[in-house]
Image 1 (tube, helix red, strand yellow):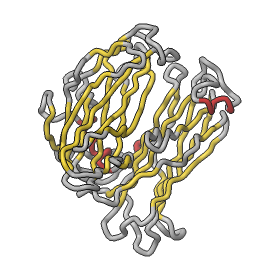
Image 2: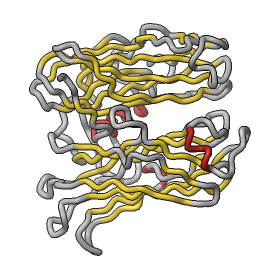
Image 3: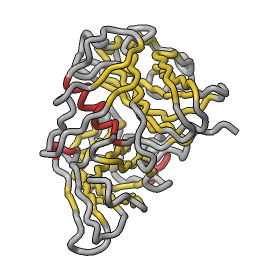
Length: 361
């Protein structure tokens, strides 16, 4: 059975994220091969430059206005690229940026890929509430596709728009104007595929159960990576963690266990991210700072959903320590409603942590 492995966020994401923030290539549309310019992938926080090549990028969406469609879906982007061998891995990334929203609307997207046999596989699903009057709202998704067959692959971005609370019907009205590459150049709406990654780059879904955190409390989870090469230079970890402000008990359903819950109350969350090589007290360890993603975030009641991103600096591994690297992720709710850290499912994770080389080949 044709089942590509969905691996999640990896090193190319750092290059892609920073490339978007630094400006696009000279291409103004169409499916193209582009290269991140030297210097465009310098990540803040004092870490070394990370450079990668985007193999394929599509900047021209099929429509520039998304209308409420209920449970219907629209194909917004499509890219095609070769997989040289079975087992080859590439980061597939989709970003949708709003230029204007006429009321509070949910924008959801999923990336679907298929190989030469034609069997479709959903890589990842993400979504966020967009609020009128807020500039440069974005919903992003990325995962690492491991091909189970060589040949030509196609990935598409499918989107849906609906009024929150009415997403199973076509009731309500509203539209989202998409910001194209010409309008917001530092973070374009796009679908991209990276060049191949090393075969040891991997990801983990940090646990299978949601994490329920009461207001005034903190809780944590970890992800440990085994058999990390000690002779191939430094490594970095990246992650995307999905949270929900528990404004109601029904969605997500775990919010029913949260004590402090109110429909029109924000939630303030402070994260602590620690990356460590295991094997003793003298082994390398890094506590991430705000520039690297460990910054306080207020998830408003209108937004409801929030996402923490982090990219660790290059961490040189000690050959005298174990070939194991662990990420310890802690979230403290300092004010407002309690939260739920969502994990998604094994096939469509909403929270992932990944390890990859600091300088991908």
